[in-house]
Length: 336
Image (cartoon, rainbow, N blue to C red):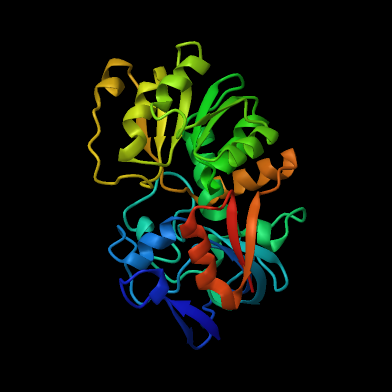
């Protein structure tokens, strides 16, 4: 079958296109003909090597995909050939708290991912795709969508009327915007692009901040919240933005620490977290149960993922290049 492999730690440009045997379906597995995949910033870390718990090599990259079951194992009872499904991000994290062992089974890093024509997965580690979603739409959810859900809903217990700050307009931030607005929250979004800020405003953002125009953007967020601060920050920047995020979070608020997109070696002053009793919690995607909860919510609220651009299977490296450019808003997908 056609596939791609991370074979070195030399970055995404060196990902190899290969032909490998189709994976065999065990008695408790399902074999899926994959039809779509999507990219996440985490996929650059895998290609660069040394990504924490996700440094298997060679490995088929990408965690997010969807397709159709073409074979079921002898012990499989909950799935049938022809059903549309999506593998979960952490193969062995089904429900409850994760374990170290489970977190070593993240697709496209710890174990083979979905940038291939076929994949084999345990029957417990896939979810059904709702009829309202295309395979392409379903393929955008396992990492970014579940991460946003875990942060705001499962960990943050988001309530109507609360204020949420989103940094940037990538996949996690856009899903968080859609979830927060559907739950009745007020949302502030930052970006360096006035065009992107206009688009998120059209999607329901209540206020926007251009961080080029406002380098001390936390002060503008405080002004927009009448000096109180926000209840939640979906913090995808990391050390380069965390201190400002802390400074515009209300007393007793939550900072959901997700990414390291900005200045990973920067130092952070923790005093604001201490003096304002702020909860800072790391969020690393989520369980199968969270994935199922998200699917039900999006289906009930009639929310569609925002897809920026689609690439063909043969254009996978071009898709990486486009994501690396930072021009995207929402998700970048690959159709097989």
